[in-house]
Length: 164
Image (cartoon, rainbow, N blue to C red; front, side, top):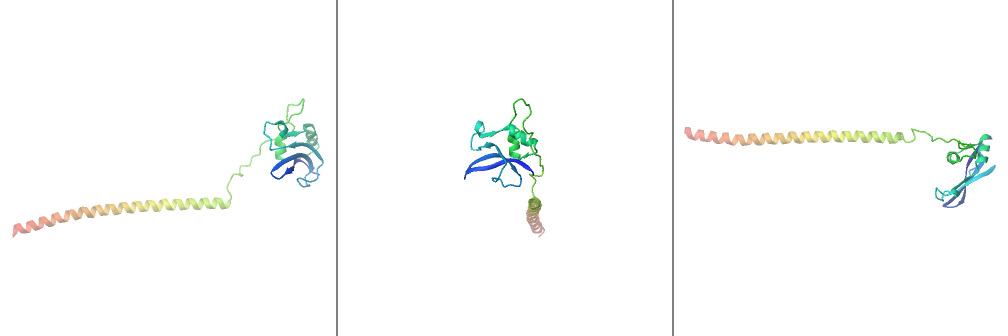
């Protein structure tokens, strides 16, 4: 029989109150339990002593018998030390799951598509700027040749008048 030290929810809607219980892991959360070893009231301020009351001796006894605390209860038990002991009732360590914050497959595909669209947009923007620059240069050259032609035409006309 796998034993768990866990929270069993009580209280009314939107007013949670939890009992810290030792129960068979196959039983429902708020179902049958073996022993109640404490209470937890999350509505009270963190510095209030009545927020968390756990009998540390009973918890240590159940842990020695093989009961495994859930993450939340393990965090609570790591803050409790018994009289005459330097270590807490249970040594809880923060879990490390580096893949937890990693995006899923679909999100990765969307990010890749976004990068491709951004690269295509920048490329099209650069081509448009280059085309505009070429058009401006061509317009400036056309204007310069247009200015040069009337002068040469006028000179040719004056030369023709002078010869005649």
